Image (cartoon, rainbow, N blue to C red):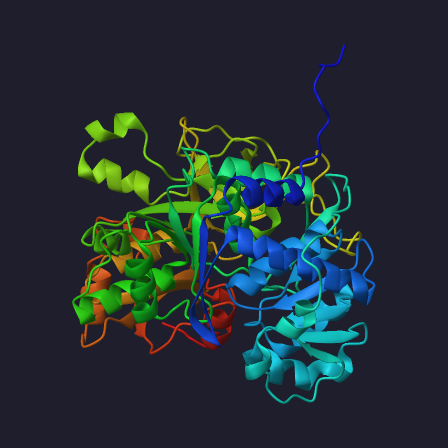
Length: 539
């Protein structure tokens, strides 16, 4: 027999209507190009969202149409999230940091009908518009007073676009499996691939992400999503925040500006934030140089790439606890979250440190397993390392319009491309990307572990490790370092500091100093570019 329960669909519309009715007084504060501190409430926002929905309806968008955004984290982008998805269209967020040819490919591959853009991306779109064969119109996210001249055709000012429309709207009844939003991978190998989220997957991801063992969000929190809204829905906070009534503070284009972030945190009493390691490095550098503090900021999530223990220790000095989160674009993105268990209070500092840098415990809703080269399951003993496979209701089962490139294996598991180990408590350690593992003398070396060890040196600001050809061992690790400002470290001193922290045979044969380490558009170290840069290197 079936249960006698109502069959209410899990839709983003339900998040919006709940937030409007229950959390309408909660605030949304934004730094934008035309207003350094825009402030309004959820209630104000959803009123404008209904106006935007009417504007979209007048244009003639149909269910399933893709509408693109090239925008920073702010209130107008937030309005697009809800008006587009809840109207039955697909909100396609595009990373403006990608190369122009990638943006061109993504817009055409998704067959976007319109593009909503921040002012600073107009030159990019103007250069591409003749190639964007499916795009029929553009909307610039600004006011009429700040509307710039542009060569774009059929272009509109956002505030004018919505202003004459009524603030009531009959939202359509949507199946919970309806596509809601779309995000393309950064395309580190080949063209970017489209991941399409559903209303159901988004709601479930938002609920689980807010649980106490994960981000532990409530209406008492003021959160600052520094992770961009153009990348995996700001790690879900654009939905989980309204679901519980958080105050939202958006940094606009100032995501890596330590001074602006410090001001927003202090003025808006932010207690929770999310970002990649480079963001937290920028914040720490500013706080140290300016002699300032961020007393209300208690917890931050760090993800996107491995976080060194040294950065966590620096954040500790300012009373900020860092929590590692791990996931992927293909996972909406949450897969694991690092919040210490009660018994760890009795552990030594060394034992606590060993756990806090891990990718966290597997969250409810995600299944994981690690397998060897023959796809045999490996034990969760914290020692065995293998390819990480995942399953779950917010894990993708294929890429958009790439049916010939299945994302799943024969048993329905998604191949993450990560090497990992998992212990008896469900704590995940990402040992490396499969393509970044260094094979030396038939044995594996984790570039991530070597990088983290190097980052513990006081004169190392950032470190990357790649494999370079070696006639005897096939590959040997090369350490690439950016020195901390004002320091002139000796490479032998840095290499010797690794002794006792990693296996002796893992220690790189050389350390090279550079002024800059390349990053992908999502803030990860670009090993592909480094391998190309050092392709002719020899010890």
